Length: 375
Image (cartoon, rainbow, N blue to C red; front, side, top):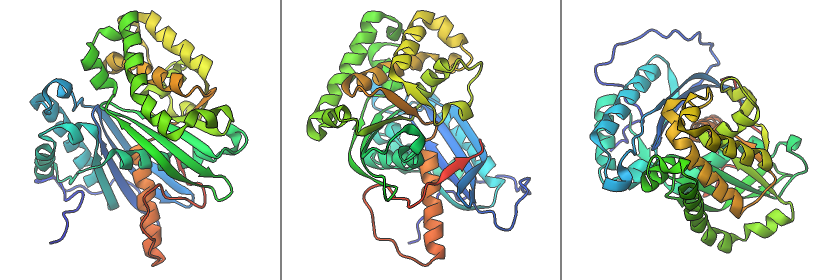
């Protein structure tokens, strides 16, 4: 039986003529990331050096709201998510897409009705969304950051990289072996920690992050969950030998960077690929704590929708940094969508060359850096 395509078309949707001025060499790829907190879509055109973004969409849907207490996805959260996915379906329908990949992460992994919800998504929107493992999530994050791992402007080459991605329902930690001569990387180990900004907020209470005592408990709780990973992989000695690059890709670390850069409003071009001194990051956390709930809501780089999750994310960040105290953090405003697009481009290139790649367990070791351009 043929596998259902990732997007079969939204049932009953109108037919649009494309408003995108296509050229004969354009090849479009779409990536959909359904997370615990956000629903994100990217449509990108392949270029000679990688891809440029043609269309991008993100909406906070809080799919995992209440999941910590009930073990199920709630009806209001599912309705919000379906509404966002219908918008995504309409946007994809306006393009002639060569390939598409759609994935779901921690909320659907954990919820007892996660698979049932995705069946409902398929019937109502046409998206066939696959639930990916924590390992796959970590690999995609590493692939999206490959050109940052190897970028010489961050100093001398390092033979290790530690990447963290703080999500809504989980935090992914990737410990990576780096070959600077081949410009390649592979995954040594990963940790999918079931602690994210929504789960931590619900576990400790929505107002607890602004209480200094509760905030310290959040940090201690998360830090304790990291100790086994450190004992297995012995990351600390590599850090002390200055052999490790530290990369953060999440709304938490990009928010801290925007505060340190004193941006009047969030700007991806200023944040992505910036280097954040750890001292400055800690100072930004203290600044957020001093703002109080109303001050955080009013900050132009945060806003009321994200305000409740900023300090829980900071608690996770501080736990990670306490465990692995690296002086500078490379900030990445990129994630699963970027990794999926890069994989589809790699796959399309391999098919055109009629070259069969052997199966790989780790990230694709690009022989040259592939970089996203545009916004």
